[in-house]
Image (cartoon, rainbow, N blue to C red; front, side, top):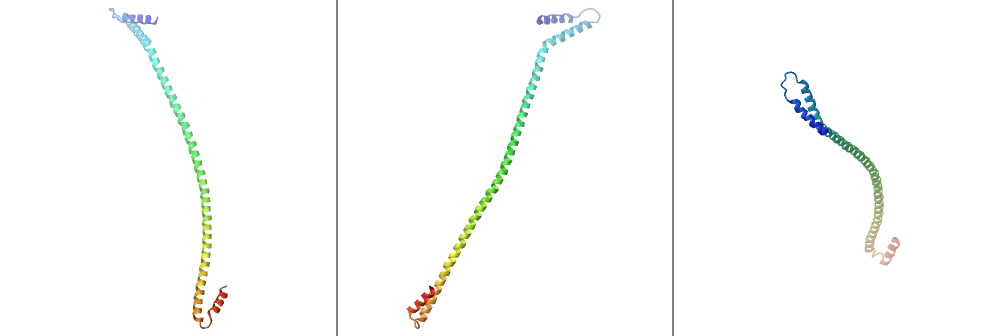
Length: 170
């Protein structure tokens, strides 16, 4: 039906567009021709234009929706990153506290070990000192005995001198 109407309009447009030889105004014919032409254009172009703008509106809405989804996703990622940063800061604080505790424990154990080594060195020094004192006493006694024996061989006999020295040393 619409095709027939379009065909009639096209024919009437041609019919009304012909030049008439009469004198007068042809404003009515021109107006009818313009209205027919505008209707024909509207009929042929309206649906594709509506579809185009409707599709364009839908495309813009889809793009806006995608952008909104990306924005929501980036907000979620930002929140997740902030949570991870907060967690990392807590971990750093815990690590610092545990490092200080471990440092104190190691320091205390090193100090204990140093004290034990110092005590051992003091004992070793005391035993070496005692040993050296005994060696000095022995050397002094040997020297005195040797000198005494050399001098006393005339006065005392050797056995008597050995007995005296043994009594003194013991």
